Image (cartoon, rainbow, N blue to C red; front, side):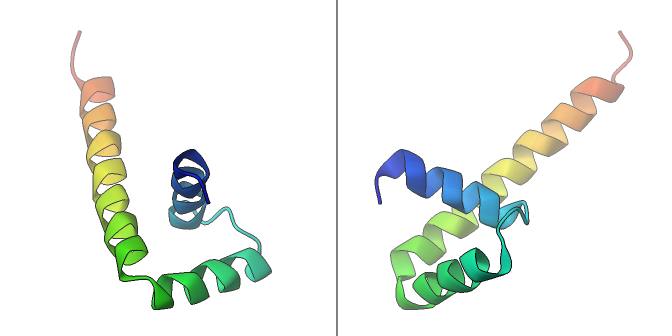
Length: 62
């Protein structure tokens, strides 16, 4: 899996956009790959910050 595809798959997983079989396969890979576990956690935190900053920016008076 190349880096861009991996990031896209992580985002699809975190956003709940995978089909049941895709999610099952991804979670199987996740259980076997500590590095992927760290990347999913890190990317999830990153996306949360982006969304929080975007929400704050959209609700700021201006």
